[in-house]
Length: 145
Image (cartoon, rainbow, N blue to C red; front, side):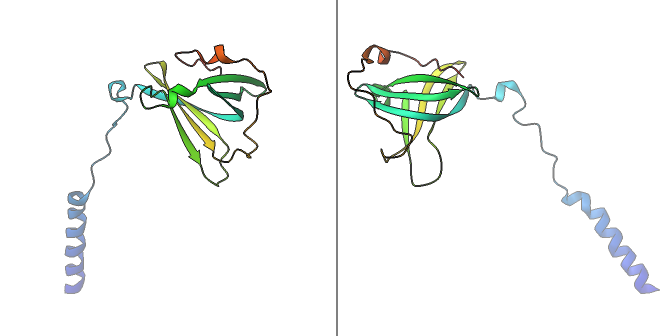
């Protein structure tokens, strides 16, 4: 009988000690709009990318059926301009894509995730004599989604 009482006391002590070991409930951190980042981004798969002496011509799918073209100046990928980054995709199965970053609702920069190997099906060649020089004279991107 003493054993049962002793076990009951130990069990009661454990039950009363449980609140001391309880964790705090998580707060609603990040739900306040003032805590939100001013940046957001959009990822878009690339159908075809064409190198040009002034930049890249990117053909991508907007919506489900339509295609759109984006002209990204090569100067944006220099450290001084800083509007673009190129990330090399290694030998994995990821298809090339780009991410457009917006700050406070306005274009901030673009990040291209491309295959190094120009023989990858995502790379293409522009036809000879294609005059696209004026298309690369831009200050910001306005892609259609």
